[in-house]
Length: 314
Image 1 (cartoon, rainbow, N blue to C red):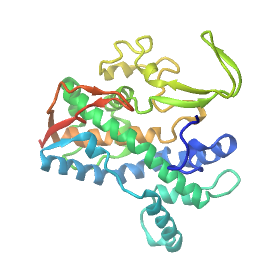
Image 2: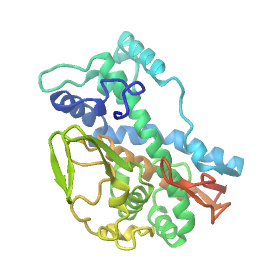
Image 3: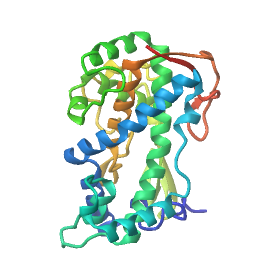
Image 4: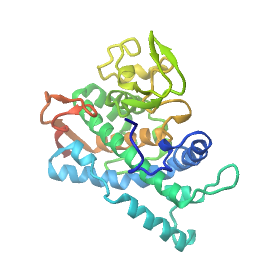
């Protein structure tokens, strides 16, 4: 028995790499995703889709949020392979925009080397797959908790009321200054358990709390437990954004992992959720159809109805 393979993401995706190969590609991906300039561009790029989706939801009137949020492009590998070839053929002058794919195609590592096409392709597709489920789940839980906690929603609406009308875009710099919104995002992803566990292999024999773990054994680090442990978070199952007024205890906020293998898109993920929340709270009102729906816990926790809502424009 082994850990999940790389047939979907490709063997050049970050999670499949170790050592210097991992450090090299991770450094380039971080430059393309998590740096302020990249985040400013991406913030503008993603908003037309978010605005259009919410407008469509309100036209339909009743939607299942999880199903809507999970819709994505099929055959991503073939699509992006074609795009890569087209970009190389056309060159930069053919387009005014400069996006994530351009970043990965042009960035160089410390030795002046660019990523190979397979490295670009594997990481684009891998990032879509990795971000697709986690963002979908987080958006679903944001809609759910804001319907359940009207006091939190009211504070959000107050914070966003001066940022424009329904459909107006906001910038990455706007988001940085939305202190309460960022706490709501952090609390949402803590309870969403977007990364419930980590896969690891023991590199040497060791002992943990009286248990001997031999070298080579497969180990699962259960992050869901860390984020729901009352030793780490008071009343851990309640939705309380104000718990993020101060810094959490060391190694208790592992939503995106930690150390050199922390998710390179952690800031991007947070920003996308904040953008969605902005457009939701300034333009729409909604209510849960099944406020007391039961929960499904595997593979990831969610209400069994997928958060069905009635939604209208304000």
